[in-house]
View 1: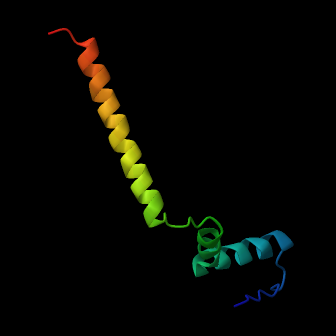
View 2 (view 1 turned 90 degrees about the vertical axis):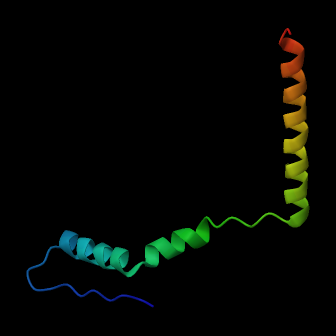
Amino acid sequence: MGFEVKKQERETSQNLVRRFSRRIKKSGILIGARKARFKKRPKSQQMKKRSALRREELKKEYERLEKLSKPK
């Protein structure tokens, strides 16, 4: 889907570029292209499990260290 913007009578080239860029922004083409460019792949099931186990290990370690440093 291409846009064609023709120069109007007595219009400067800067105004033409400005009009073109406004039309592109309103159409949503630019946003869609950026979304496609920076799209992240979803995590696999195995990676989700690994990260969950890692969080659990860190939580246990933190609790253990917290118990050691607090006098009763």
